[in-house]
Image (cartoon, rainbow, N blue to C red; front, side, top):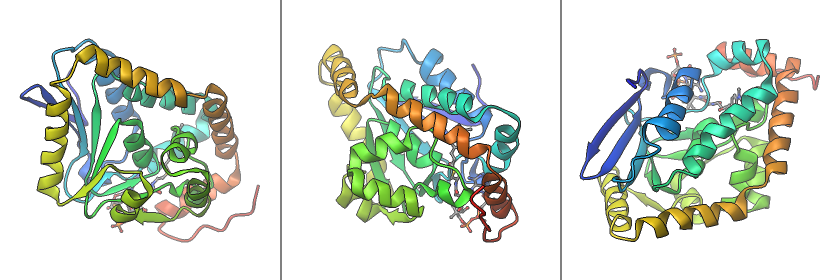
Length: 260
Ligand code: DAK
């Protein structure tokens, strides 16, 4: 398949996958989500002759600044938020369960769905300007692509709860200290580190690598947790607070939430 919003290059058995919407800070719109699903679920699903995938964002400002707020405002209003969250969770699960390791090269903002996308990857390498957060509460919604489940897994319940309830951002150093990212490095070194890690893993037994991914994930996959997240996300998309939060973002003003 040819992609509109993804760029794919392959060198030395490593696939470099770039989300390419720099004007919207690589925000995830429906088309991009569809293309990620196509890439991990179909096009590269049976590609056993690769060492792995490096996933990054185009430009030097953002990995992914979240779901595309302007678009999902319309979609969530018209559709079923719970079903949409389930579909998104499925795409991210395909990444988490991909047969070869996926490294997120986080080169700037990783917010909301962007932070969730990085967390669905097996390893995370941040550049020094990277920042992370789950700012959904600013929009009157909650993370809907697995953030309430995976952030706990990486940084523990206490800090995850703080980040999700405040919407605060953390910088790359703090993300590293908390265990959210594996390495923080200057841009060039970060890109090289991702290649070095995948090259090293590529020398190991491919079946062992695949089965390791499978066994690690088995411990962390709690269908009830993801199900509750999808249901709770759906509930928030039906509130007028969500209308207010998303409109405030588009109009570049502070939201006035009413709790309804
Ligand atoms: N969506 C759409 N456009 C975005 C965007 C986003 N998430 N983030 C940035 N942009 C656009 C801006 O609107 C702006 O466009 P123009 O005004 O130039 O047309 C351009 O990118 C540059 O952004 P800024 O002018 O705002 O740049 P600044 O340096 O001032 O600020 C920023 C950078 C990243 C701090 C700021 O842009 C920002 O706060 N962005 C939004 C971050 C955010 O709240 N992200 C969304 C989190 S909520 C779902 C499941 C999950 C989700 C949604 C649906 N379903 C199941 C349906 C997840 C939701 C989220 O991710």
